[in-house]
Length: 303
Image (tube, rainbow, N blue to C red; front, side, top):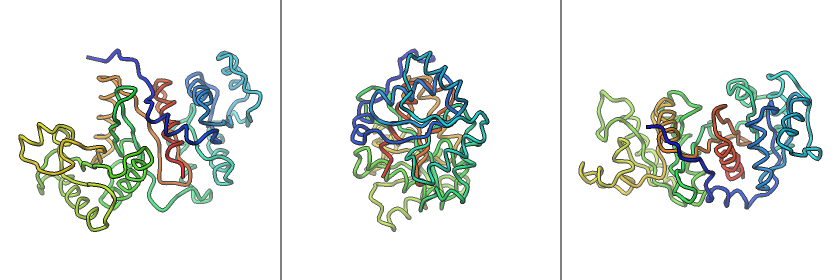
């Protein structure tokens, strides 16, 4: 059942990222093979200019193993994991870097620093995580949010998540995204709280005149399958043609993404948006191509 398909970074994301060249990024707790390889790939693509933060000896050894000359890039020698996150946040607050890339560091350690008010990295909307999912190199993306950061968001938080994903969709070339607000049902039921949230979000999106077609509640099948939507008699522009799945909880989003990765060989490009700088928080088990795609997504997300 598990896919043996090779994961590849999608061209559409790379093409958009190539419009911005040599973006300064901080690689937090660099010095492990996979993060270094993905950063090397991003440098080769002329997407970024890295500042490496971490144990200098380990960083240089990894680069040597990759036969990569990094002598022209800055290395900030800091062997303590927690301190690498502090340095990255400070660099971002001083506008010395535009993107933070997670290396071999726990996500909660990194995000704890990013969220500290002293660094002034928070934006007008709440931070949220976006997954840009593709199965083919030239394929249309499916965007899933939030499957990593906001655990059990209420309606107010979901509206922040919605606004962030509309902005990101615009940046990858979707001028008016179709957003399915997911639940376990397409009916509004008191017994299914996520369906009540979805109906409220649909109304709020219309009232606020957001530049997107937003509709819910929709179950997964009638969000992505025209046939399923037709059988159930759902007549809405979003039904069966969603560009974005706005999920009710982190478990739903995380499960969908992991199923696409392991059953379909999907490339999952993940990025935290909504703050002053995008943050790339890949999993330690992510393939190098998915890490490259995540860096590309962060470049695209830049103002």
